[in-house]
Image (cartoon, rainbow, N blue to C red):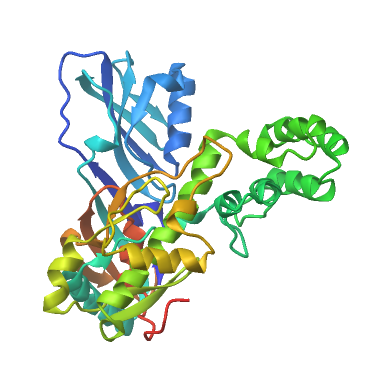
Length: 396
């Protein structure tokens, strides 16, 4: 199977009830792009229009390897359009408030899965029927774990245990699959001269890593202080990755205990296999479809007897932790966010069409269309319907 053989095979349209008007200080735009990340496209816009980033607001991040449409506002932005290398900005009117994630009602997807044979088509169509019946688990997909290297180690977990040198090493030195050549060179320097901070600083180019090493030149063993000086967006990335991993494990364990292996299969993600329902017993349906699980954090204070509490305790015990220990001791910031996430997702307007694959001779194409609430991963649905379900076995 081939996914995203060309950007037009993965279409994403942001849906919002927001309408443009004639008044307000926020100019409202639609951003259409192909082959760009959202931050890169907005950076190009800021350069062309000389816009400070603090004047700009948008709702979500859209994939680079796709053709996408989304909305944004610019405080006192220009009332005109912009075309720039597969990025189109269309002025729609004015708003009295900035656009944000809460303004997104859903995302609409049209995804072409290519180079399929008849057996693969039959499996996918059968899986679509199962999703219509059972929904699918709202796992965080692999994109959430881009900061996790090989073998998987979590910067935030090391921070929780107070192993700040290891946390800093993972943040600065651990290799990642998409490291550019300059990043690989910088990491090699850090690895070769780790703890020889003056020499390490002399060999590093200007940048964030060098600023942290500069701090260690005068505070050579204060790794907690160096970690505290990581850029806030990186700190947030590391904590959300570990919290999302724990939430995935919590949902997987709930499915095993509540739905049972007779009704489950598994699919493989970057960080291991996860259970997915192939059917939901009628007596479990209402609980499954209304299930909401918290993002694990010491900041939540569940009532005794809360149904998910023993499951969370089991998941965290495997990590050597309890819920109250899930915090970064000795640092006021960063902290694990507090929130809930729906466990079951039922895509709306789900449809499919089978055609000849015009790009792969002798193969067939399956085009799937559906809407998902914001924050859900369309790639999880793609994996659910396109990958063979693995025979049930306990989640590792």
